[in-house]
Length: 271
Image (cartoon, rainbow, N blue to C red; front, side, top):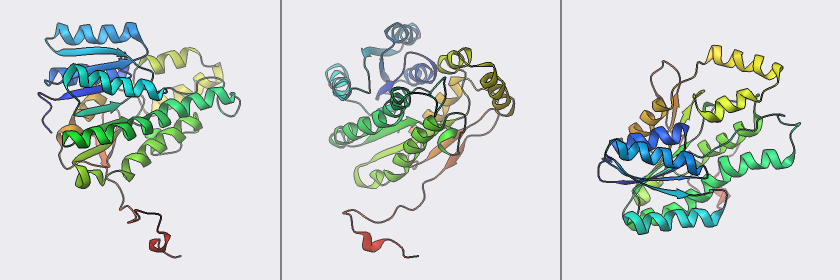
């Protein structure tokens, strides 16, 4: 898909990966909807886009609220006549104390934002993109969604879910000209990360330093580049793109999905 002339919605675009992607897509010629609960950050993102000659609109949106997701799509319809690209990027980590010492309200917040909100946004986006003749959905997962991440098991579980959703919906390309992919970055230098480190216990910081020494942080612009690559590659669907410091982007294509469409377990392979 050529990005120029398209409309892109980016959640969590008030900072970090979302801002970098919003600025990049606007530079590529897209009209961008900046959606976030961080109103000040969103305003800064829009200002940066407009200062560079791009087109953007801003919307306060809490994607854990289904009504806000509806409002996001309705706003985009009123403002730009619809959308072609959706980047599900809003996310959060568990923080301190870590699982299992954190309360239910803490780990449920991670699941609601990092997984359930993505599922709900995708569910609502699909019929809208079908009416438009197709489009692209990109979600921000993580390398923690490809491998077990013991430092934050709940975050890792949510990101595994995003990768699984992406792979399971790969067939939308043939069914409705909708391609769904995800980026799986390593450690990204974003406010989410820097604020989290500031709140860590000395023991947690020591573990964090070990992680960063093995996997140095990457700038959010590197992730934005991965998003662009997945948008413009018309063959990419169901892909999980690993983005690691000083490494070429590695794409993991989806495995073959089981041909079950109506709960027919007779087609499952036997042991």
